[in-house]
Amino acid sequence: MPASAPSAPAATRTTLAGTFVVSAREGGHSHLWAFAPGEAVPVRLTDGDFEDRDPAVSPDGRSVAFSSNRRAGWDLYRLDLTSGEVSALTATPSYEGHPTWSPDGLWLAYEVYGGDDLDIWILRVDGSEPPIQLTNAPFLDAAPDWGPDGRRIAFISDRQGFPDVYIANLDEPDETKRFKNLTQSAGVAEADPVFSPDGTTLAYSARGDGLDLIEVQSLDGTSPDPKQLGLGIRPAWDPTGQALGALSPGPLGSHMVIYPMGSTMLASIGISPPQFTDDFDWTDHGLPGDWNGVAIPAASSTLAAAAPTGEDGRFDLARLTDVSAPNPQLSPLVIDAFRGLRGRAAEEIGWDVLATLENAFVGLNDPLPPAFAFNDWLYTGRGFAVSVGAAQSGWIEVVREDYGVETYWRLFVRAARQDGSIGEPLRVRPWDFSTRASGDPSTYDRGGSLKTSIPAGYYVDLTALAEDYGFERVPAMSNWRTYYQAARFNEFARTDGLTWLEAMLQVYPPEAIVTPTPFRTPTLTPTRTPWPTITPWWLPYLKTPTPTPVPPPATVQP
Image (cartoon, rainbow, N blue to C red; front, side):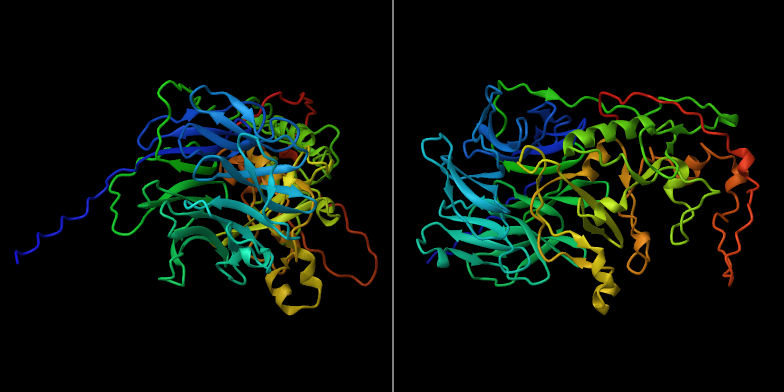
């Protein structure tokens, strides 16, 4: 018998294939963009004073399904990539989002907030049939992804405690047997499952021990344990199945990462997604040739609307009108951004959450509690702290987010109207600081615990709105688990790239901050002897603040 011919070596890919359609935040709103790897400038697909998210490219590549609140509340829409026309697919008072296409392009599975929880529904795209409810459990059922065989839908559910990956078998008529828990991982929260193009593997993100990891699970039974690829959230497959994309989250944004699968070698990866990308889909179709789109505008420069008014180039503070705070003043360099944020938040939430602050400017002669760092941004006039009372009364939910060794917090404010016209439902369990005082040593050591369930209702992400106006959240201090105030979950600062010292020098002379002794610890006395009035030596250097009322800006400031 003749010797068999040697097998040819596997081809090596050096570039990424296909097109990315992403949802990214720009100018204070999330919209859809498209770009191919290696292209210099992404193409804007949608625009307007509303949010467009959750892009899902149709199997034929000619349209994109997405969710939007361009009318009152969240509905599903379809963008025709040839004409640019947008048409509504749903029009209900309930929240609807996260669409995924069936392989034949005739159906969409999506999530609906009905009652007090999210469920999965199925809709015929041409509207010829009424929607079909797939899940109806009193728990979170969200983030569906339709398998390439057309007979399976993966989704996330917390019906057994922590969010796990489930698979619905559409051929199973018995509801008690239709849903299978794929992961069953106690203490780990999975999210955003996606089938590989051949349907043999499922990728998802898993959050445990403060890290978001991308994991892949074989569905053919060959490997019962998932394989960890690396850090990331919201995975999406390369259309060929040879790579997996994901977003790598950080406290101030995220960037895109690519994980090669198997023996694939990606020697050159040219990715330039828009800043603040929060979700994306990966298709093997390019944009239709007659669709022009709009290029991303150049980024605006940093805010510099005010000129120095004090001695040696320093700035007088400006007063916040109609704001209740111990010292309602901010630097004139950020006060317009705060006013814009306050007006936008009141419009989005339905009530003025920033009318009462825990703190605005804090002077060196009126220091913060000793648990706070000397270099806190509240001293600079560039920071503010939301009212703690709003969180303690249940109007604000606090979600814990860990990045490496640092802990950050995301604030969700309860919308004034709970009819679905504003806000959206929560997807994760908030943090409960109060359980650290419950007498349980474990919750005390952890500084609290996750709430036992996701609060019902509609909420607005105040942290995302603050980022639109340049205000960054402040990380918790290292002792936050044992000292409640050190969590700093309610504090925001607009740094504009300055160091804390540079920001301080915009308000104080160098002599005033060279010696860090801002807090005078009182000595205990057996009688109610009043403290004498102490005049700090640096007080003459700080000029009396000059009220400078300025009307709120009409547009978002970078």
